Length: 501
Image (tube, rainbow, N blue to C red):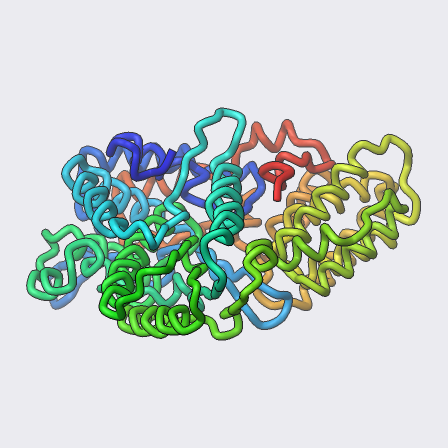
């Protein structure tokens, strides 16, 4: 179910789920649900500002210490995108600020206003948004799995269908979308630019949302935190506004024969004329610049082969390879070649998932384990997208070694990844590999340290006092019962939403 089809109460429950709070891959024992519930219960009855601490602004004059006055209220780690110099910052939003914003947008009146605005933004059926956050309708299917299925149905399959009606397509996307969103464009998107510019009061919902997001970033107006379905939803509001502005511009160009599929910051523009496509691209560029964003020239690709361009190149390449049942090492070497040809691709994740399934079913002791681990580690080193599934494979391979060799190899793997800066994400997953072998292995990443020491602070909460501060300090985000039930070998369900791509 789309979040826009939910009641305000159900939308609140959805956004306060553990999987909505952190929608990037973390080991299952990171569990924020209890913390979010406690904070939500407290803030249902009290304003967040009631829990602001005080500071002495002038002699004998105390003022509230507001979140934007404080550094690092959110927990951040940089996820390396390509094994080189490109980074994606993931953030675990300060629970007090996250819950406060969820509560703000999901009051009955505010939610109705937001849903009605989305409906207005999506009136042009020639520009289709395919990325509104979803909740799975099935108990055994994760929200992430539903999102992947939605992409396949709404983008890949729809693109194939549109080949019947159009002869030309341009693929493009926004460079550093979340980091570029101008927070003042949120009230523009929700109310219209003129109303927002004339009404600066915090009582205007869009201004309130804008202010709360700036509270998360030391008052900055450039960028919104990435890593939660709440921020995906806010991004969709701004990008939906961009769709409306683009729709008006296309209409002024008298272009009628087109269709645009947008999946968040990714666009597929279908036309029957390259001239029309270029005009739409020009207008899209102008719209995005007016909102502080720009297109990625490296990812802008025109094509008149709609079938071939509808399927991702890595998928075509991988499906074209004769994938016979080769030896374990040869299969990994073929996957390694795929990782060079199409780094960080969905097909690479699928190939490694198939490999993990294959070795997981093998009961006999595997041969040349060290060599296999070496290949997997080098694939992961260059392809951060596959950190979770790679650590799953490593956990299975390590299981066939004696404890001394396991410890030596783990040390080598950790040293290998230390060569990369800002590797918080892989360290979190390597800790999952080592946790059941030796829980006392030390990691520098604070989120890893939290596993063994609940007193480690991962959010700056100096702006808070009283019971709210106490809840955040004392509520564990580590689910010990999950750790107790885990095996040394990572289960496929921990690292893959399903075998689908």
